Every structure is written in structure tokens, then in C-alpha cells.
Length: 370
Ligand SMILES: C=CC1=C(C)c2cc3[nH]c(cc4nc(cc5[nH]c(cc1n2)c(C)c5CCC(=O)O)C(CCC(=O)O)=C4C)c(C)c3C=C
Ligand code: FES
Ligand SMILES: [Fe+2]
Image (cartoon, rainbow, N blue to C red):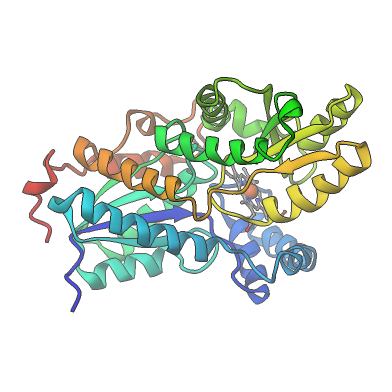
């Protein structure tokens, strides 16, 4: 019999439909999420948009193999991370990874149910978005708070939060390895001329200007990766996947590719930087749409860096992030305490107060949870 987990690590992410049949419910949850977007008449409009968008998005998932690989990768990363943590931190072992997706199975309530059933009393909520945005990690944390209130009203579980890790040395090393592997594919005399385009999901300008920290954290990750590579190549950050008619943060990858082609660049490496596994936006948008555009523009040395997926450097980084967090004994980060200047959502305050109020002994060795 396996021992009861002493420390749970709850991996938070948006998730994706594992099968084509799940596409509609995924989109439905996404468009009804008021932490992600606020639409007029959202209760009525969201189901309509979700239904209308389902066929096109289904087709994209069909073209990348019939579903999102995010659950497979998150389980893989989580299991290996927990094994590394058992070796690194025997005082808080055994560790067990749980997965809470915001828009697809396993949902937060499922993960909370498992945690309660296992009787785990100490859990780290660990966002799998390295860069913080209220539209992503913020939404997952608000949902975790709501489910905690419902499923653990007595507060049996003691929580702490890893809400961002944009410049963690292990993450930067893992990304640098992915970039270097692509650069190594060019002939030696051309390699230094390749332009590195770090690509992150864009944000509506209304979210940027209310004070979301995502754009600066994504930029910090990109700069740290290039510093790790001794600034061997020129780079920029581009913002992909704008949805709807309102203004979003740019430049988009197609603007960058067109400009670079005009200036005579022939070698471009596109690097997904804000998502730690493959998803339609790497496999469909970056590879199929931008790969095709690059060919049309004469950028014949176009390459896309592999997502972190099964990178052992990345999985070691995850374990390091958690072990450093456990050693610090902090419930939430200084950055997480502060809200956006124009936050429209009182829930953000409630969530922060709840997770900040959990106090821990600094050493997990004195944790009586197990
Ligand atoms: C760090 C990554 C992401 C941020 C920030 C983000 C913000 C954001 N997204 C939308 C609207 C949509 N996103 C959709 C899909 C989607 N979003 C991300 C990541 C981030 N989103 C990913 C990885 C995916 C795809 C999932 C996959 O499996 O590949 C969609 C659905 C697809 C579509 O209809 O086009 C929408 C809609 C908003 C409004 C937003 C910030 C407010
Ligand atoms: S939207 Fe950013 S703190 Fe509420
Ligand atoms: Fe998105």
C-alpha cells in the first residue's frame, strides 16, 4: 500500500479538450468565465458564442490529432516532479501531484475531492503559467477559493501558493536548451543571423492597462533566456492569438514575419514562452498558420522551438520551484498580494485574503500534516 501523501502539489492550468466531444464544454466554460472576460449579457451570449465557435475549433483539434495533449503532459510532469521532491525533501514526503484545470477535466472540484479523500492536509497551489495574469492564474486561484469554500468549509487543508516563476533559473535553462537545439540546426555560418521570436498569448489592451503584470513578466522571461544564451542572436517578443474585434497587445507574429521578410531575414525561430506544453496554439497556429506564412514570405529558415513538454531540465525546475517555496515557508508572494490598479472584481481581494491568512511553520519538518 502506498503511504498517505504528506504534501500535495496542485498543478493549476487552463486545460484543454482531451477529445473532440469535449470541445464544446471547454469553450462554454471559457466564455462564461467572468475572470477571463466580461461580455455584455454574458449568461446568454457565452453559450451562443461557444456553440458557434465549436465547429472551427473542433477542426483545429482534429488537425493536431483529435485533442489537446495538455493532460498527458501535465500528468507526466507532475508524477516525475513528485518523485524528485521525495528525494530532495524527505521531510515533506511523500509528495503527490494533483491537476486542476479551469476549463476541462479534471476540474478544480475533482482535484479538491481527491485531496480531501486522500486526507492531505498541506497543499501547494502551483500555477503552471510561469508568468502571472489575472486572466489565467488569477482565474484559477479565484476558482480554487470558491471550491475550497464549498468542499473544505472547515479548512482542513492548509494552503500556500506559487503564483509566478517567470525568471526561475531552471525554467530559463530549460527554455534556453529548446532555443539552442533549434539554432544548432542552422549551418554554423548562418546561425548567428537567426532572429528569435518569443511568442506569448496576447491580452486585450483593457487588461494590460488595468495593471496586469503578464506583459512585463513575459518580457522578463525572454530577456533572461537571451542573457543565458549570451545574447547570441537578436530577439523580440510577439503576441499571438488575438480573439474578437477589440484592441489586443501586439505586435502579432504575422506582423513580425512580414517585417522581417521585407528586411531580408531568412532565418527565424519562433519560441512558445508562456505555456509549458503543446496546445493548439503551438501545433496549429504557430506551425501550420505561421509556418505557411513564413514559406510564402520566403523565410525558408523558419523553425519552431519545441514546447517544454517532457524536458527533464524543466521537470527538475518544477521540483526546484516547489522545494524552494517549501523552504521559504511563505503562504503567498509579495506580488500576489497587490491587485491590479483597476481591478473590477472584489473576488480578487477575497481570494488574496484567504490564501494570505494561511500560516505555516517555516520548516516543513515541523509540519504535523501527515
Ligand atoms: C498564458 C496564456 C494565455 C493567456 C494570457 C490567455 C488569455 C486570454 N485568452 C482569451 C480567450 C481565449 N483563449 C483561448 C484558448 C487558449 N488560450 C490559451 C492561453 C492563454 N490565454 C491557450 C493555450 C489556449 C488554447 C488551448 C489549447 O488547448 O490549445 C480561446 C479558445 C479558442 C478560440 O476560441 O479561439 C479563447 C476564446 C482571453 C479573452 C484572454 C485574456 C483575457
Ligand atoms: S483583475 Fe487583477 S487583481 Fe482583480
Ligand atoms: Fe487564451
